[in-house]
Length: 167
Image 1 (cartoon, rainbow, N blue to C red):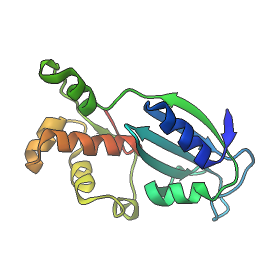
Image 2: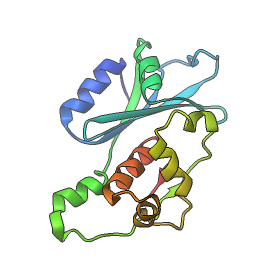
Image 3: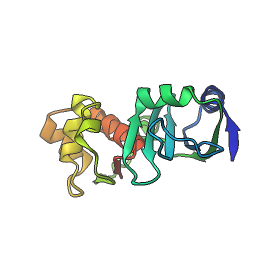
Image 4: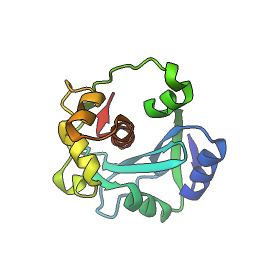
């Protein structure tokens, strides 16, 4: 476990220029303002930071992205563990060029997301999430939405980073 404030954590993660997931908690039991214990996951993929804070009691999402980051920034001291992650498929394809082997990914939902949380997402995120059913490939979703596959892959990466889906 590492410790420090959010600014130190972000500086360290972005300084490595690698993709990471940080599992965050407080060194002592401090609540999220509502008096309940919480956990957080901060993801850095290609310099883009996403974050989700949820209740340790019932796994209910409390804060996401900018609101979660702003709230974590107000806390004087956090504890975290780091886990390296593999680059998103869209980035891997770009690095491999035209000879990339296309793997048909079938995204699946990992959790129930409350409507009030989904309302904080972009329109494309909501559209893609609605079509994720465990049987449609990312290519199929792109076709249904009449969007380029790279756009849908980016949205799927974002949804995976916040823990709403898995591939």
